[in-house]
Image (tube, rainbow, N blue to C red; front, top):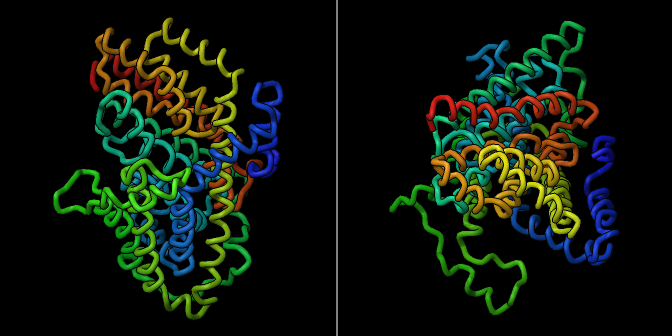
Length: 460
């Protein structure tokens, strides 16, 4: 955490400190690095790199084609510059709830948020905290029916649905929004009173040039964003529509004789990735066509697309490195006492409190909401479920509480998603982590307040 905060690349320090952690274990440093760390890193990269690559290209085309600024200007016009923070929060939430990968939303919403903050003269260093709340909180785990993986993971353990405990989910969403909007707005007023505005920031990498004065109507600019959502929903077909697209269940059969070590078990494991990949590619063509006049008077299409492709490689390696580090830590024999202590919490304080505490600890260690959630449920999910049923607590309530808890203290300094978000914004931990840390401390209490809400009202 210290080295990540000081600006060291997590791509470098994650394997080094994974090796340090393995020094006293039975695994050995080099075997841990080559067989455990690199295997987990390869698994993550193999699964999610298409989203990073085409998400970065799509976002770059939206930014350089003037589409993002057009949508941002319209939202500022509708909501007013005084509601710029709320505009970014709601924009992020809408895309996340619409089914886009959270990393794709980060790529897409950064240029949007930067334009809105610049117009409102809000310090740019507050933008990562705003994006974090908008992307990685209420729309990811709390809103009923959200298609994000953090809301899907508990379903496989408790046989519940993504619509579990909708009232608790809406209550949590309100709290997350209130925390993010309230803190960032307050900080912006304090900093502006000290004379700090958006600041002078170099945007967009080595091929940046001043944007030409070519206006893109907001309704055309919005079309590629809508296309991503609609195409992804149709191709992933989450509601099992008869007319929706169905991936061929035998699509991977031809690869079985090759005995590929990372081959997915079935199409269902990768169809969501395929869906969003196709959606991003098609929407990128639309964005390029709509913004073609701006590209023609700038660098053309090649320079921004190449820049996006290169930056996407760094982004996926950042996240994969943090994920692999967490996998190493939780696989070491020395982690067993931690597991035993967490089981003791479940026995003493019941399933809901135990779920919140355990999930937060795991998310903090791994720097990943989904990773921490998966580890916590694999350790204690069956026990929590049995205890909840014995206490008359619906499993739907447990589902929602444990999902909400996964985004408590996940933005620790070594969190891969956080490192990527800061890189997208062109900022450092030193610039922006204070506000992220404060929001992290505040939203840590959200699942506890949800438990209190359920105990007092009995509403789920």
